[in-house]
Length: 406
Image (cartoon, rainbow, N blue to C red; front, top):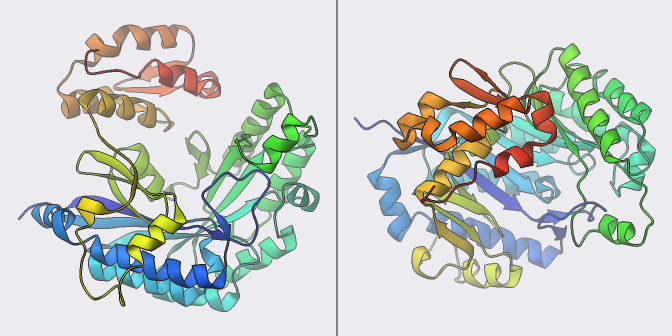
């Protein structure tokens, strides 16, 4: 019997209550009519994705879904029943492993205790809550709709609903932020009972088209300098390590055994399918994404009286954003720079087994250079970023980009 290959699924819900000042994600406020049209189109896409060429490929090679991630936007601005209906549609179309990790992102103030109970009963078993800061003034400054009290109420309701695996998002290097502010957020997070199993901690990045970028260009945004940003980042990592967490990726820290399986799948090259506006996929050696044009997405997937009435030839004419077939050089590069995001790094033996190439011949000199610089370390078969290397990770990654002629 053929062994099943692991497959991950991402579902994009582009709606939110309001756009945060730093956010450049594909998201916008939800109108009632657009909301209804989008859910209709999304279900249509999920069902019809199993048609034509894609269905043939899935049937030829046995796949089992091991993780699902609902992201956005804020998925929980939708009624809980709609989220559970989407999950049910996925389960009708795909084979799920018994222990599949099923996550939804959630913002405080967008979900009730009853909603959380409905989600848990339907099969969601991991919650990612967008705290960002535990300081109310900072939350106001970055345009969030909640305060810490509202976050804590959402967190406690999630625990009561039976969610054991909860992630909390934290952003550092915020405008006007001090090290004392970071410590204050950490103290409040570590006072939660029980503690969250996972923390995602990111430094603020200014993105084009955001309110923060506009303020920065006008000289009205007082941000910590680069040295302070690194100090804040490592304060989070070190304090959480003292509390029993382990850093397993550049920006992710978890209690042992509670690493985010979905994201680890991205970093280790597992195949995934993305559904919804702008969602990306990596399947059968191709990377492709849906159109980011809402009108185009709704116009295609919203056609017809019912999404259950039959399939379109989704391969031939579905609206795509980008599509590329990966070369050997692409796959080698991704193995290196995605693998090096993980704190345990990459295995030389796995590299040579996967690509049938000699690691030393391709990357020996580059790796030695970064070891001599103190940016990489080698233990046994594994190569990984040092603490200093994590601070300049993109510099290291750039040296492992290659073409098929390398």
